[in-house]
Length: 278
Image (tube, rainbow, N blue to C red; front, side):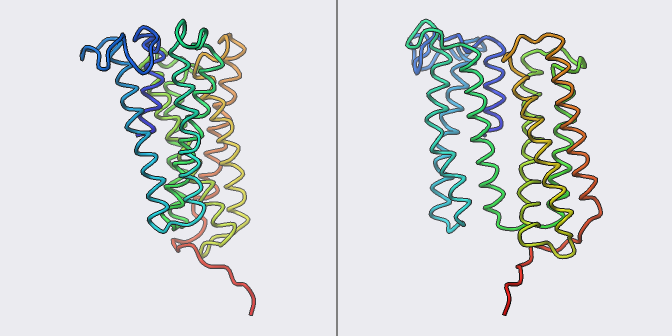
């Protein structure tokens, strides 16, 4: 739901629908529910409804972690996602109230903040999901690196830095869906590699896990850079396009390096407990 919300938000902004609804929030053109036809008002309203439902589900996930006997880090990740959710809602409201409650709200800075906070929530939910499972293995680590590579490479097809397709609203939504899928794979890679470093997987070398974690973390930083440059956060000149290309290439190379390092390393055993003396 959060991944789709990300894509819907990008599509809404790219089509200019974020400025629909006569710059009102939470109403839309003086209505609670606008005309249900495909138009800018409906796109903006549908994005808001999806966001509302997703928000309630995020709160529900956090409550579930506290009632379901999950470990402390899972509870913390889910609870932090809820804690910063009001900030995301506030920034989102500001972006659509230009000429309304907050003059100049539809600006580069508010869009950047909206994107960064959303990415934080998405990452926290990813960690809650990964940690909530309570298991790790070399197989899951390999799957995570494969998803990371596939997502980043797929995002390159839609990226504004690579002229494969016109960077239309649909392409922008596709770029964020695939890029965030790659981000999810990298988050999982770092999480599982950290488990391997701390507890060890049967037949999996801890020094290898450290290398994989470092490569995935570096790829994640570069990928976040491409996600930020995927929006109109800068005047997209030839210089910024080259910077975007470099960041994308670094993300791909490091993710492939992590996948290659993990390939064939370790067995299929689960996470093993460390020995703590007599």
